[in-house]
Amino acid sequence: MTTTPSTVDKDDLFNSSTMTFGEHLEELRVCLIRGAIGLLCGVAIGFFVAKPVIHIIESPLRKALGDYYTERAIEVFDAWTPRRAGGPTLPYSRKEIVDAVEQHNLSFDLREIHPHRLPGAKPDLSQQESFDTESLAPILLWQPLARDSRVSITTLSAQEAFGIYVKASFLVGLVLAGPWIIYQLWIFVAAGLYPHEKKVVHIFLPASTGLFAAGVLLAFFFVFDFVLTYLLAFNEWLGLDPDPRISEWLSFVLFLPVGFGLGFQLPLVMVFLDRLGIVEVKTFTSQWRMAFVVIFIAAAILTPADPYSMLLLATPLAALYFGGIGLCRWLNKSPAS
Image (cartoon, rainbow, N blue to C red; front, side, top):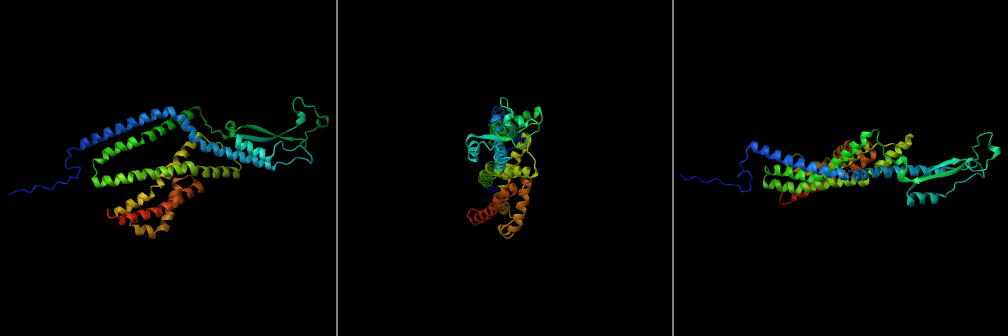
């Protein structure tokens, strides 16, 4: 009796695989060690560039604080009136003030003095018996905005600055070594995937990376300005002067962009659920109102406790939701699906 040879699937990666469970664990160990070495190299580089990275991270907050205190100073300037008719007036026009702030990057503080009490001035003997407020004259104290203590970011302990430097170095190392770490994980995982599964990963992985990067960039270059403006205005409404700490700001900088990056994965999650048959595209379409409720709840969780950042995340997520519906329909109509 002739034995018919079994049909060999050339696309099956495991037909020629002789790796035991222990060998798979050894492969995982090697990949993890390589990833860790790459991370250490990235962190080592980060120690040399952490200082400018910290300055870049601080820049949105410093700008927001500068705008906040400049606007308050201009409001004080606009509201100032002479203490008596014919009394001393402001030494600058509003146009000069705005030009100094915008063109020369200066900050100012409006104060009042008795000119006749300055050193070298001829004393006014008629004003010696009591303090005269009506003769106070306005004076503006100027300084570079970068040297204004109100726009500085503080630390509350000597070791806090070093901790921030280490965190920034680790962040740089993670960004630099991220592709290498993902590649090492991919080497390990790829051995257990069929070719058609690899094809899906090759499509979804770049798309996921692009969407994550888009969310991070949107948060850092667009959302921060709105959120900081709102939070500082809320401080002003309560009559409080903000004194931000670098450690708290670093946590905020990391949390908000990551929340946006994760939220931007929504279309891929929808496609994944549709392809697995867990949620069909018609369900996504009919339940869009419920989906919007979930989107706003998720936006509230993924962002700080302020309405601006929640709305700025929920709005693009709503657009991405309908984009995900369109993508699911297109893939379902595709002959390759």
